[in-house]
Image 1 (cartoon, rainbow over the protein chains, first blue to last red):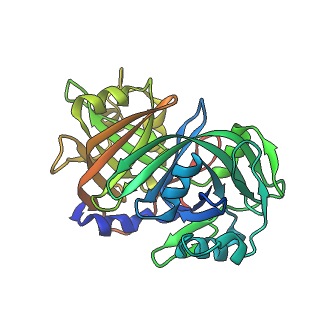
Image 2 (image 1 turned 90 degrees about the horizontal axis):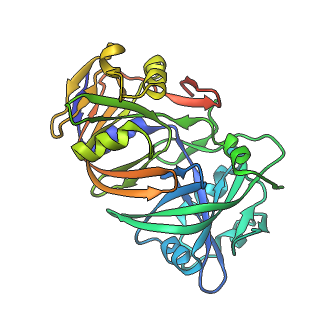
Length: 167
Length: 167
């Protein structure tokens, strides 16, 4: 049986929702990470991934400037970093420095990887689509990396930014 | 530490991945469901949701014909239906009838809801974007429904179509 409700109420059934971190450099060369739950794979061949970024967020400027981004699958150990990256703006913070997050340079795009993550996907921007109050950025994956040490992905477990692993 | 690998290998770290069912009517009025893992919320205000559909799939024709689709969060009890909908083509099967899946009419679009699902979102097509070998369809949510009985969502737990709940 189904009961009609407001969108916001129906959306409470979405959890657990995967968490990713998108990283793009601003015009000053500062790599800026942001935590996102709205993401999908958009193509298998060629590989593409999409992310939804609120149109007012600094990340929109960064991706438009650098025309690329890293899409990171954070590990379940990275909940604090993900919360920090998701709750501060890169306009006035160097989030990666402030959180002392270990990075390595990307290989094929001008961005960085998160060394302790489950996986990193280097994406070249191919499309940006205004979708309501967000911009949907589609990137073609040009290089992929995984952590040889097996790890669990990070998920949003419920409203109020509860983050953790699922099994 | 990160190790460079092929995209396909890195993608194996994506699990658990949420599962949705998209339903759209074909030109004969047959409601055709398909199971998808590639989906995201695309906007909060107005609410929008996106799905990625392989460009050769019958669903592409159905959505283009009816210009709307239902996005369903199946429950963890619906694994068999989800497998069936994901492994048969609506070109030569009436999947909802063959699987005897309980439906009710949608309220604001010409589609159906799945009565036993966790939630149903009625979406009016607003954008269709070619993304590699898939079409990314973006729909504006015009009506939302939930199952008053608390249920768990269905997830893809690993390669080989292992479906189930997560906690």
